[in-house]
Length: 60
Image 1 (cartoon, helix red, strand yellow):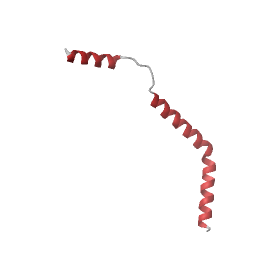
Image 2 (cartoon, rainbow, N blue to C red):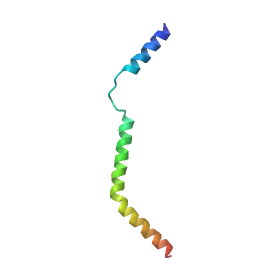
Image 3 (cartoon, helix red, strand yellow):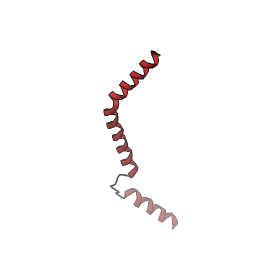
Image 4 (tube, helix red, strand yellow):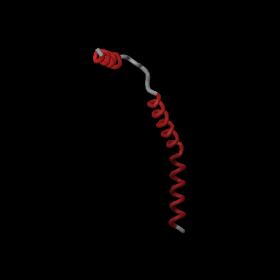
């Protein structure tokens, strides 16, 4: 009888249509979007900063 209840629970779980995206998926996608947006804006400034720092170290 117990096996019947377990099989019923598995069938119910596997056929249920949740229709909702888990929170961790949304957080991951939103974080990736923020990183891409910040990188697009800050990339030229970071590149200039890196080049200036290397130039100063090499000429030291």
